[in-house]
Length: 195
Image 1: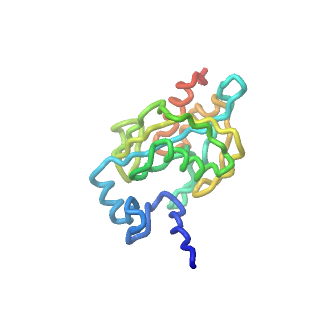
Image 2: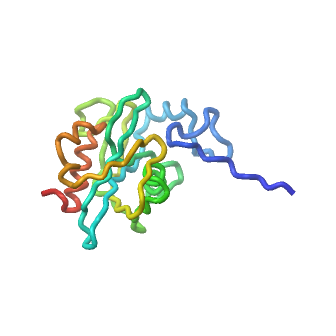
Image 3: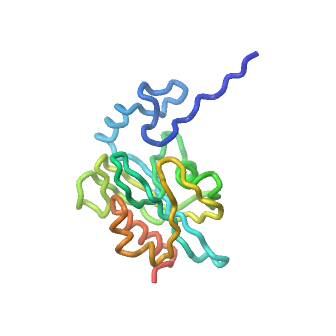
């Protein structure tokens, strides 16, 4: 009797599936299907601002990712990725936290996570504070306490832990892609960590 091993999941979130799709998971899109969907529909994303807290629940550090873009540019960002068809927002957020921070990050997600804001990214700069050349995207943004060791995976090169003041600085904001510096400031304001 042979035991069939499950098909491996794609390594990253981009592209969503193999070029010809995947019969075992019809929710995966080929590169062509994804590009077509991006031209016609807003895409749903989750974003997470990882934080460390003290015993009173006050934010003491903010985790900012260093990431290389496909064209070799280095930028700062936060945990971010698409929600898959049939996937809960909570599961998508957990999956992206684990992909970017590693399996030992131990994010503390409540049973029903509530975003601190909804960010809308547009392909044309200036429509909102957020910009994404590829698409119109709607992102649910969360502040997520993590208690474990963060060792980046996927395309994240490192996690830098900053004080809330450092994370809210203009200098860091200038290094962040797509207006995410504004999102980090909103995250810190939502938990009372801006002074």
